[in-house]
Length: 507
Image (cartoon, rainbow, N blue to C red; front, side, top):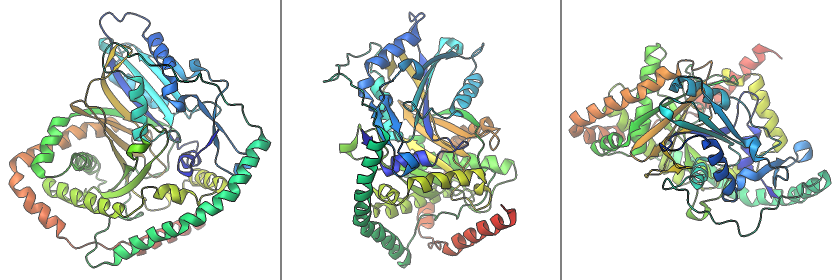
């Protein structure tokens, strides 16, 4: 048995009937010419032989009575591979649109919490004889980096699957603890937890004081604060249903823009998303005067923690400069914002979110999330941020699954209450894969938005090629701008606005 960390458990508490907390991936595969029938059985046999490489696949949750402590992981004595691996097909002629609709519907369904929290679908019937694999796993099990490592453990470097040594010891499931044992364990943790909280309290308070001290420094430039984002059509309470779109851009073109403008690949990815969001909202006459704010997850996984199936993440808020018309100045503003955000987060401990999670009671956190969702509180206040943009590094070499060559790997991530669009990016060989997921009601025209990503990169490439000499001058001018106020008054006004609207709405 193993107790979930506070950070891992928080993804369980945040889950509601409309806000599902599983992440996924969509693999597009090219089977060999002589593959024939039976590809699903080959994949299932391969996964069965490598289950010992992925502990998350055979662990289920054991909840504590009355939710007085975080749940436990136990090895599932009733583990059934056939339940988790499923064989389906898209209707003829097997278009990409049909596949996207299928993935969106599968991603709209919550996982069964009485079983290990993952599903694996082999999808046949695609045009050209291709095969797709859609997987999903709960975020309480893994973060983005751990998810990539987990998937790579099932893939091979060539058409012939590698020999996988058996585990040192045969797998033996845990005996499910009874309620008395679980409560006794929770009671012991109830003694240890306050001590851990007291030990970490000075560090947490120190973090707050450091951020406050830095905010008072002359000329200090801080990243955007929560609740400073403008309202957009994306920032509403969720429904349970999703839409999904994919696009592929050339990694070489992204790197060429990066080199010409003196920024990072991540800055270019943010600028591409910014350009697409700006054009999409302007086309609907809904572009705010103030810049959109993106939340960007950051991996804090150390070398020693690689291979662990858990969450080791932090996050930063970045301005997307969607209020800036000039594309070169927009990139420079984004570059300046990401640099300021990184400098601020360098001063924060890597396990900050884990420390904060110690102070959240399971029962209170879960009920607060349900109330927030049920009463659509996200519609009552200014957005905490507008969009999630995540950039996950992927393998730079071709991979294979059961002899089929992996052509594309698209992330399928999580929209959230108040943030109805998520753009997750993963590199693979010489291209960058975009997975855009949104609420079905909030973003019904998700394909139209996805089309704008290539257009935004083309705009960037043209500007970088013809105006590279201006880039350094513009970047210097942007960096010299005075820092903006943190906006504590704006945050206070937002809280007052929530209270006022709730009172008017009544019970």
